[in-house]
Length: 84
Image (cartoon, rainbow, N blue to C red; front, side, top):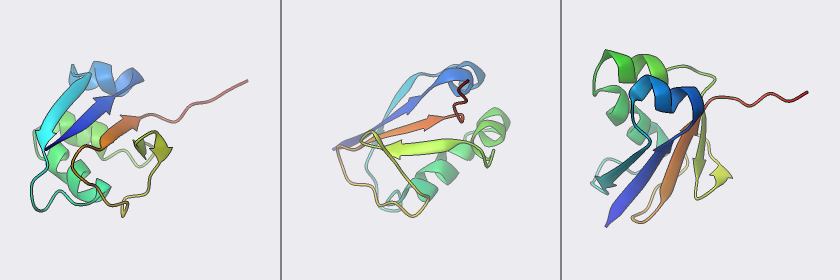
């Protein structure tokens, strides 16, 4: 099974990527592990994903770094949203 990873707003633009389909491999068992794996793809990925303000969601619910991942999950990374 796979994980679906989505990037929104400026992250999508920075990474030139909207959606990734990744195999659900051992070691990619938390949001933090997935984030670290993606950041290891290169300097642009590292800069975009190591920003502490980046929000994460799993299956459309806000997630913490320790949130567990399972095959079939959808993970989203997005910048904080401000309103007025």
